[in-house]
Image 1 (tube, rainbow, N blue to C red):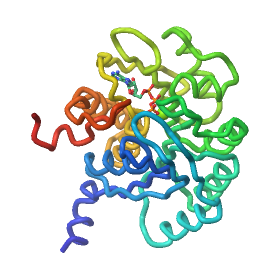
Image 2 (image 1 turned 120 degrees about the horizontal axis):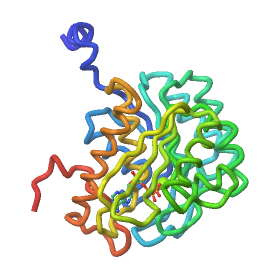
Image 3 (image 1 turned 90 degrees about the horizontal axis):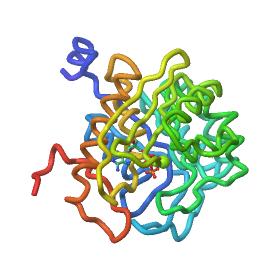
Image 4 (image 1 turned 180 degrees about the vertical axis):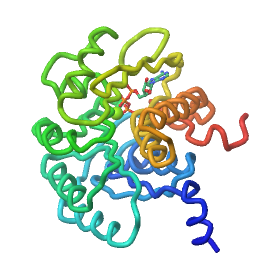
Amino acid sequence: MTLVGLVAYPGRMIPHVLSIAGVDPSGGAGVLADLKAFSALGAYGTGVVTALTAQNTRMVAGVHPVPPGFIAEQIDTLFADLRIDAVKIGMLGTAEIVETVADRLHRHGVKRLVVDPVMVAKSGDRLLAAAAVAALRRRLVPMAEVLTPNLPEAADLLGEPAAASLEAMRGVARRLHALGPRLVMLKGGHLAGAESIDIVDDGERQVELHAPRIATRNTHGTGCTLSAAIAALLPRERSPIDAIRAAKTYLSAAIAAADELAVGHGHGPVHHFHAWWPRG
Ligand SMILES: Nc1ncnc2c1ncn2[C@@H]1O[C@H](COP(=O)(O)OP(=O)(O)OP(=O)(O)O)[C@@H](O)[C@H]1O
Ligand SMILES: [Mg+2]
């Protein structure tokens, strides 16, 4: 019955989406947050863990990377059985893990890839070895359908100072596109101003995504949630820019509802299920 339904209505197929990222035990970022975003957006979520962290909403106390060989085994075992419609990449930690993940994604012919070049946690703790940035730029950035750096990550990828204005962001987005991704979504969350503006660049034109800047300290995992939402929506929406717009709308509502959760004492998580849970 189900199979007949899928054949008759292929557009209604439920996407299978994979997060390759670290574990944040507080559930606001990393694989756990990605699974929440996938689930909220109607995708079946899967996860390959690159690192365990000891982390809360205030700090990252420790990082325990998974051996690269075992990351490869997780990916290969998953792809040997499941259809995977889109992948998002978050924290990778080391150059060796970057190389391993790139090799496996090539091997499995992954096409829909969102690369979130996670380098530093909201708490300020470093999550990617400085020596791994070059590997990320060379191996994974060119494979990305969508690359989603924040301003400090964009600066590291390009080896230049971080953009401090919208005008500077335009140049940064274009230079990032030249590194090879199909689309760049340069996130402006780190700038001040009444609006949080992101720039999407496809190499020919740029689109600005405007959203009111919400006054909350609960922005832990905004970047993880956004890239996961894009991956969940890429298989459903008509174009990558449609997926990006819908993901941004979802994230903005999750940030607007974040204070209802009140989890932890630092930068708490956004509310992934704002549209589904009873609102207080
Ligand atoms: N206070 C806010 N109000 C509204 N939107 C925001 C706010 N902060 C960030 N955003 C949006 O959230 C998304 C993530 O941006 P941000 O620059 O915070 O990413 P990030 O630094 O990678 O996040 P993370 O620290 O979780 O990795 C962007 O679309 C940005 O515009
Ligand atoms: Mg981020």
